[in-house]
Image (cartoon, rainbow, N blue to C red; front, side, top):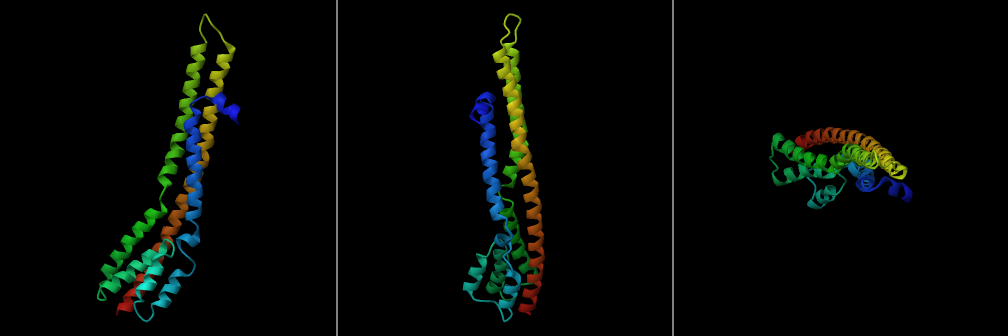
Length: 205
């Protein structure tokens, strides 16, 4: 591996940095976008059951606030009703929608960075290719034809092109996978929020 890095020259170092960063982002999102960390099992049913007789105590709302990404969205509706028992449907929906936007932003965290790496890695590989071609043309002159320098320029060009694609392709695939996962979670949260808003409206009545 070290010999490949040495053969590829300095342009490969930004690609190595991108690969390490991409791996860290993929692992972080893989953990944080698990179902139990976003929408814990039965959280909606348990919250509705716990609020059948009215708005629960502050301790329960605080506990709900810590229940994954979905918990704060449900807690925002209860908190709005706790602060103003006569809150209108529009007030409840506005409060929960704002919490939902914050939750969606939390789910999308680091995805733009991963998409940037997927877009930039081929360009960095192309930069390495151009540097390698410059070395080739610099070594190949009418008065001097040095095979070692020609081989070095070709290796710089090819290694950087290949490594740029090796970084970009998995980054793009994981970005698309996480993007679809976030969309699925956001849709599930929207459905749960609408159901809970109707429950709160009945509770207020």
